[in-house]
Length: 289
Image (cartoon, rainbow, N blue to C red; front, side, top):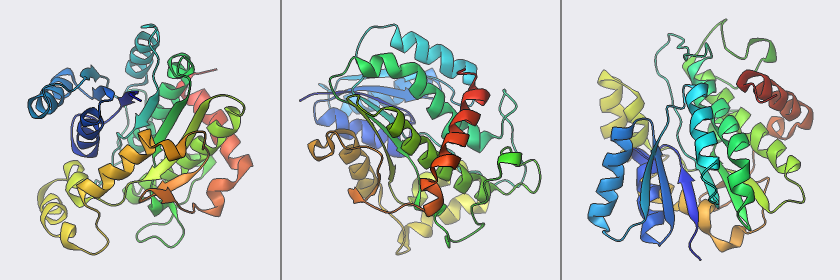
């Protein structure tokens, strides 16, 4: 059965390839990118490959909560159902300089977590119009204890990382928060025909390279793809397509997946009190309440 899928991050990388794969399967794809030009370029590229593809361009800058709000309200007011909300867009900073959004929030937290949180909340009317809707958000195994680099250290007293900013920690903290958001969302959706899951598509160096510069970009684009821990674009996007439309996931929510099967997330991600605390924080920061 054909579904309507709204996918963020569709202008490039995993989002763009995933959008193309979903369209090739006959689904109606609302391809969302940061700018109109990026969304239209990606849409036209898919249509050139598949002239019959049902792909519509959308654009919103996820680093601006006002843009997210305006976009989501307009989309919900169209009156059409959204069967799948696929949050693929995200950033991985390499600069040691902490960057803030127009709202004054640390950029990694804002784009990777707050934007999906707000978008989900405001698109709930459109999701509710679907007989069986899915919300899928990209997380990462890197939130697990023992992962290479800086450890996860989510401090509710310093969620903006004003003290001792580290881009690696900012990314891992954001992915832990994605799991808190996903699990708490599923608890709040109990009894409704809407499910929420998170997915780790793997580490795709060629995609991550887009967020870097200079020698780091060259290293990630041409050296890391040959490392044994790297994931191919094809495998990563197959995982995202699976999460979006595979029938085996009908009615299943509150899970974390990788390589098309359920995987474990950290004990901290299952801390209900911390998840609720983060939810309430996200509500305040996004002004949902």
